[in-house]
Amino acid sequence: MSAEKLNVNVEIVEGGKFPTLGTKGSGAVDLYARLDDSGAITLLPGQTKMIPLGIKTEIPEGYVGLLFARSGLAKDGIAPANKVGVVDSDYRGEWMMAAYNHGHERKIIYNGDRVAQMMIIESKPLTFTQVESVNSTERGEGGFGSTGA
Image 1 (tube, helix red, strand yellow):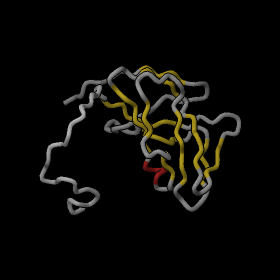
Image 2: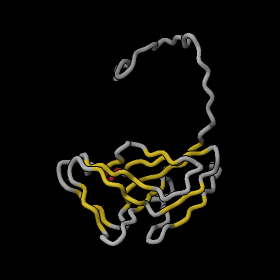
Image 3: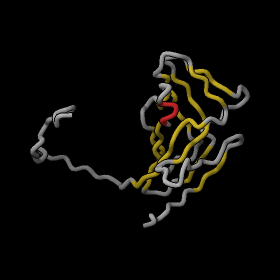
Image 4: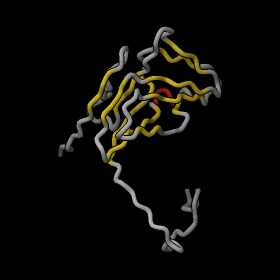
């Protein structure tokens, strides 16, 4: 069974790379560091630096772009500082990743390195209604490990 494909227009910023799928079954596309003159940045432990990703997008209205860590970098302690980046459909600037080094050693990111994964998912418009109280459920107010995990 083949899923319907969503087209997203992508502009490559000078020196950037087009997003790629690692495999046919990949759920997200890889994005690459676009580093100017230096060709590399060093992330010290506990440090955050902005990494340009070399693309601008036209995400269709009703969708949102989500930016995640790549598992290969996460093993080294590198992940988005905000855990998941959100790119709205009306944003037209270059995608950036606030890379944070959770590790204990410095990490060098080179121009062209795969540094993030991107998914574009449906994002329905929301409305909110204020009520006196919300309906109860069997779980109730149990959170953070209350289901036994």
